[in-house]
Length: 313
Image 1 (cartoon, rainbow, N blue to C red):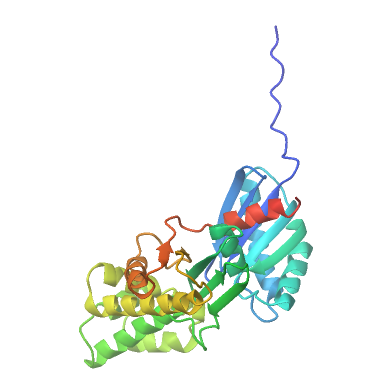
Image 2 (tube, helix red, strand yellow):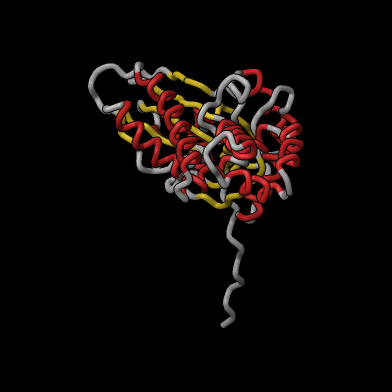
């Protein structure tokens, strides 16, 4: 008896897409209401003024790779994108239109990255989210459901404790070491090696044209030096942790009473084994006695996927 032919699996009837578009890195996941089918990482796709087309192009390419990993084709039914730099309605509308034109999904909703991260961490409940990537920002949803923010104003106005801030600190340490003005450090050698440069003067020329994203890419060298016990790097990481805890403290005033305040972490600098995470945890326990750090790392792209599925009821 001849066995019946093997049929390829049916395409899911409703496929959704979630994306986390940061300044240095983006992640896209595609899936159904119950399963992740494909995932891909790509370059940064944060929104810049008049930059919707550029952000959409990066996200569309990353989405195509995520869909291909699942054996699917775009467009999906619905997409939710949490994008850095998309905190205002105008930027959200512009990126939504660009993603629709790029054929990513039949319906697109763009939200601020912090709003998506809050929903991922706490659902509709209260809590504080601290995000440190290229920049830094904190969001909170208070017990009454109102959303608040602190920081996140860009590298020229702040972003203390974020990647650009730490990268700039690394350059400061390198310059002081070059002049003999500061404590001895390996950071100059680390930066030259990482950038493929030979001399300090080459580094000076590099800084003249470096973008904020390129500056932020220096931050891991500070973290590595701190992990290896270098004093000036450990001080820089501790200072960064203090700045990030200050963001959380600024939002804690929206949580009256004595109940514990959940605090979650997101962003590429606050990975579980990062010395910045350890320094943040230590400082948080001292500065905010009511704070309770959420143990799980926040996967904002997955949270965006869940929001995309929920938007249809």
